[in-house]
Amino acid sequence: FFWFSRYLTILIYLNGVGGTYFPFGGDSPDLKDQPEDEGSIMVKAAGKLPGIDGILVVGVEGMDDYVSASYVSNPNSIVEIQPGDAVAFYNYKSNGEKEWTSL
Image (cartoon, rainbow, N blue to C red; front, side, top):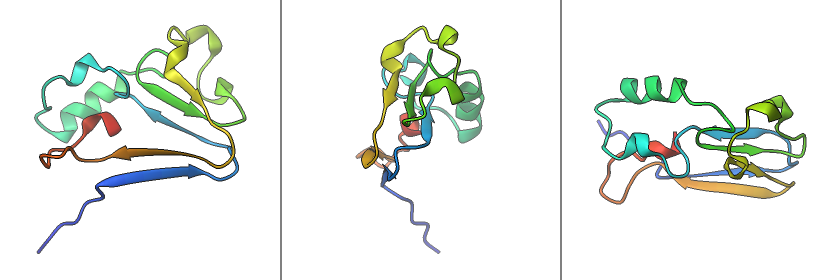
């Protein structure tokens, strides 16, 4: 049988509340080579911290629900959304391989 996977994901923040964390978002040197399997990528992701690694998308409630301001070493890694904003990302590369940075 066939497996159909989502090629593109769009998250719409209707009321501007909530958040999403992409541990490998932005410039992630950890993913220069394609990981061997999903288990190894999950182990790498578990060691990532919002405000230091990746990209943290936060709503109007602010980042305090997700990370302490004292831990933020890269303020450019935090994106504040407003009601009606959306985030779109690809789940697969054009060659069919998984896009691990969208994890």
